[in-house]
Image 1: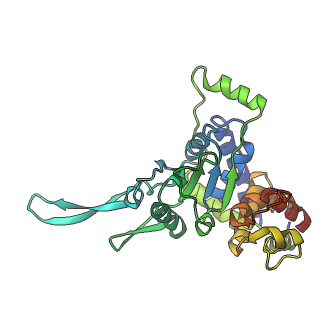
Image 2: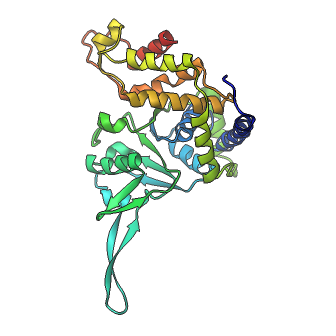
Image 3: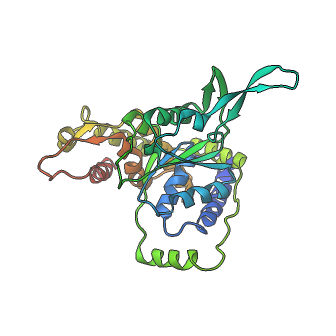
Amino acid sequence: MTDQSPEIVAEAEAAVEALANVRSEIGKAVFGQDRVVELALCAVLAGGHALLIGAPGLAKTRLVTAMSTALGLDGARIQFTPDLMPSDILGSEVLDESASGERSFRFLRGPIFTQLLMADEINRASPRTQSALLQAMQERFVTVAGVRHDLPAPFHVLATQNPIEQEGTYPLPEAQLDRFLLKIDVTYPDLDVERQILVSTTGGEEEKVEAALDAQKLIGLQALVRKMPVGEKILDVILNLVREARPEQTSDDRVKSLVDWGPSPRAGQALMLAARARALLRGRLAPSLEDVEALAEPALGHRMAMRYDPTGTAPTLTALINDLARKAA
């Protein structure tokens, strides 16, 4: 690691302890999803949003609720449906009349005015409603009737998608998927974890998640993540990986023939920030090659697309990204 001031080192050591407490509190409610919890925390520490993709019943809602409490943030949940309108999320102007007969408009804030928002089954809403949310995610404010309303700080969205049933859904366009810092695949638990889930959640009173941080401390941690040093070797690996994943710039014949479009520079930004956050979560003061390899698919997977392969012999996108990451390192 490059030379660091004693203040930065002390700040980082305190952050590592605080984040260990956060993970411990989340672990009271979410069992065995260590990778999912880590990636979700990486997204928040990096100042971004995350897209959770998994079948129903895999504790996605439970995770967001536990994270909201453990991080000391105000939380809200929106169940997306085809008839949901932008105003149902952002808020709307209502006409008030005073006792003297004077009329004026008043803004009623929507559920988006929270610090940690769960957008449940985001692909079930119409593109118009999706765009309203995703624009607010990017800009951190909403405009209603020509008036700007700033969102709370910090502001993060954890959206979910069900990969099984696609009937009646509106898939997110590529430009909107790019707004998510990380895509997180939520898989089924293993045997021991599922046994623990059955025992812990069907018995008596469950453990209560307590706040281990607050909003201001989280903002301080996010600032610390951006101050963490990134070595030239890690920077070169990230650059090489992102550029090798683009058909126009790659030297890999598989990418040229199989990848339709590659990741934008935003993918490199996401990977660099998330690698710093993962290093901090694991008690290190600078990211390593392991961080880049572990985060390559979550950062790039939703920012690329594979061409149709009629032979059925092509690798999956995940396998291709992981292989490119190993080669870049």
